[in-house]
Image 1 (tube, one colour):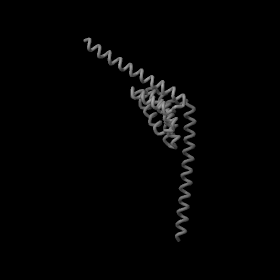
Image 2 (cartoon, rainbow, N blue to C red):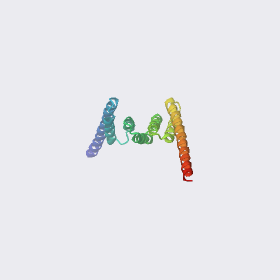
Image 3 (cartoon, one colour):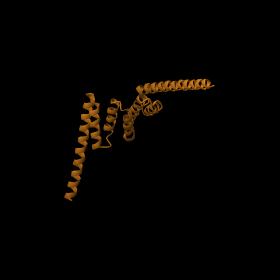
Image 4 (cartoon, helix red, strand yellow):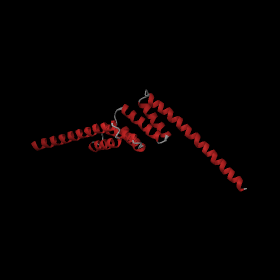
Length: 166
């Protein structure tokens, strides 16, 4: 019986120590992030995730560190993990907002619009997300208009080439 109690106590202490290490890595990462050392913050948040793969706080902060380093694809992927693991609706809304920002920076306007809409479903009063959604829609429209002009120009050039052959 004593061995059983000691085993349980050892397990509990081990989990507690890991949780403390995870929190320390997050705190260290936050200090580095605030100092503008985003690559080092990334390492700290990654270390926190090694201690606890389900740490939504470390996942979110890692996404922020990626974003600040202009690693937009990694940031979007990281924020998607937050969406999948978070229980809190506001946190999910913030993650969707950040997915939208990451995709917007990557000029993936359709996908960013979808992310912003998901954020607004969870937090309909978020004016910043609403603004970003409108901006993404405007950028998509501009992109589509430019593509149309490019297609028309290409068609005109092909017609001209065909005439020159005659």
